[in-house]
Image 1: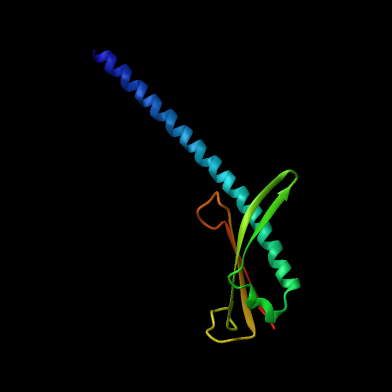
Image 2 (image 1 turned 60 degrees about the vertical axis):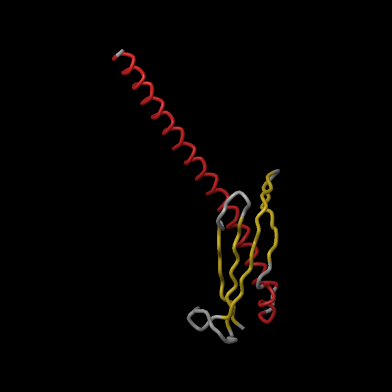
Length: 129
């Protein structure tokens, strides 16, 4: 009987160790996947920010506030959808939020993907008249 209990205990310890190792490998894999999604989201947001910088007049920036759009990152046959959310606000000379109209506006673009519950990337840029 004591040998059976010891054998059972040894099997339990081996099972727990294997389960922990498998869990840590899964966590590392999940982090690798999230990092790849963050890189793709970063590329999409930077590209969109450049489009805003080149193609939007200062007086029209506030029209972007609250906009939501779907943008795909495509590489070969891979295509990943991201939801971009725009926030636009007036800022003072040091970049702090301003309650009045100023000659500077901050555009903030946030990228999200349905696979993750939190935003992946947020970029902001200050534009001046």
